[in-house]
Amino acid sequence: MNEIVKKLDFNKIPIIDLKNLRNGKNKFNVAKELHDASKNLGFIYVKNHGIQVQTIENIRHDAFKFFRKDDNVKAEIKISNKHRGWLGYGQAKMDDRAKPDLKESFIWGYQDQNGISLNDHPLRGKNLWPRSVPSLERNAMNFFNEADLLAKDLLKGFAIGLNLNENFFLKTSSKPLSRASLVYYPSQPESMGEDQYGVSSHTDFGVLTVLCQDEVGGLQVQDINGEWFYAPPIENTLLVNVADLLSRWTDGEYKSTPHRVVNKSNKERLSLVLAFDPNPETMIDAKEVFGNNYKSKFKPISCGDYLIWRFGKAFSYRK
Image 1 (cartoon, rainbow, N blue to C red):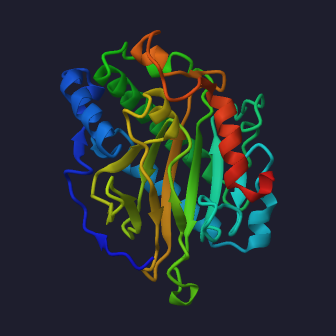
Image 2 (image 1 turned 60 degrees about the vertical axis):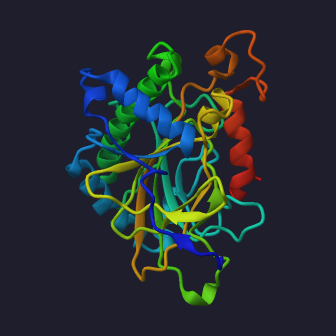
């Protein structure tokens, strides 16, 4: 990794105010901005996004408490075969040619007010909550639910931008396959070399990613010329990005762009993530977007089947 990483260019990743999309006052103008950004690199800073500052502070506090505990404490909720719980160092590898990622994660999904999760798919089952941080369940679900609302607002905007019914991407989303995660990156020692990443170059698997960075930074995005540039945290914004299934659904019109994390800050780095996906049976078929006579580059595939394939490649515990 000896290439030069450039400063952020706002022509590549714009800041979009979602206020008039979310309150319905001027959905079409915001939708056009989202549409244009998605055809460019598919990364967007959003403000007036609806996730409360207190929600973010609460879950960050609990996340650091959890990740700073001994591994034998965290292992109480080690990753299940339904992709829930704690994933330790070395168990994720986003690029086949790279070293395993230098990160830990805690992963959970939808549950109802009684704490009941769906258990009907290889990537969906009971959430595992650490007894060592009892408030994490409440704070994590608050984040999940607020980020879920944001993702749905954004997908309405994308649909409007494509001249579709605003609920097009949400018509089968009553039981979403979405996953949320806390991702913890230790500071990367120089001795690990230039070819070690917090997360190596990858595109995201699902439909849409909502990312709340902290002030440490370290995220890098690749432009269409193959050059890397920083996507630093910007106050009062979140980053959202088009992921592979939304790109496939739009036959590549919306871009799912490679990105990676390098943390050489001498500080811990923590990201809060929601990977939004609709129900597992949802068919990802560009003909539904562009019409029955459209010749797509991709065969139709269900959301659930696609994610099983991608997870099998990326996570060593699934092999």
